[in-house]
Length: 297
Image (cartoon, rainbow, N blue to C red; front, side, top):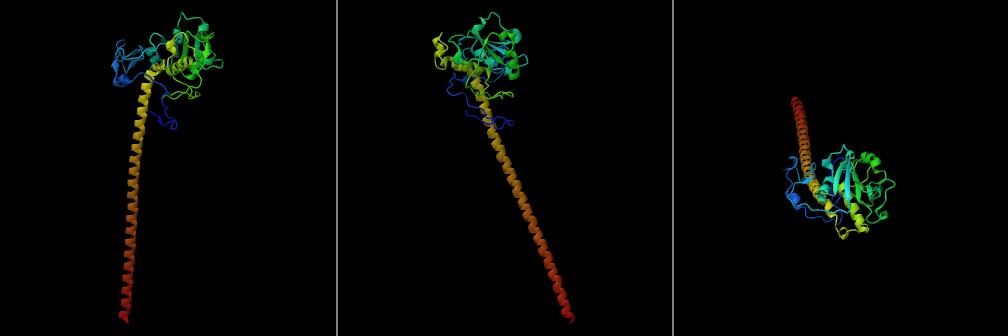
């Protein structure tokens, strides 16, 4: 579905279409299971997945599995709400390969720092083209609002790790970026997808032939595509409802205008009639006076 107007506070902003060429598995099962279900682990009622337990709530075997070329740690700020984090989707789709951590839960038993990398657009960040093939064993993604993300990036835990940046990416996320972040800023799910796809396209993943297949990483955006469709449908309904309201309002205004014009016309006619009546009465009085004068003579 194409873009559409999304919010009154930014009327010029439109929902971008899903990334060109993206082909995920069918999302019918997500449309069919949108109702809230009880998570078997925590008993909370959630829709499609439990972000607390990082568990899918659709039938077993319905969620695609994505094989990644490295382990991924998504570092979140303690003030961020996990329910808004698309990294939860990655932890489910690439089960056992993606973990979410607070900084005080930093993973141990990491490979050497030169085999780790942080996906963050710092001034010294490397482009994908500058990386040696298969040179990453553990990737860190900082998932937080921009000011907090910069704070996390300065942590001593990342001191000796390379920074990597994405180039020529554009988000189709439906949430507005914070002040100071351009539309090139992407969601966490998009960031991992773009990085893996770029590494594959530039022949930086040579250890496994499956990583070089077309659309090897498209299903990282399986949940994301569904959510995008839900938002796009809501935008379309809002646009249609707004059009109907506008037409209805215009109809009411037209009726009021016609009624007002009719009232003005009626008032003018009545005024003319009264003035004509007064003129008639004056002529009659003048005629009587003339007759009286003539009778007198």
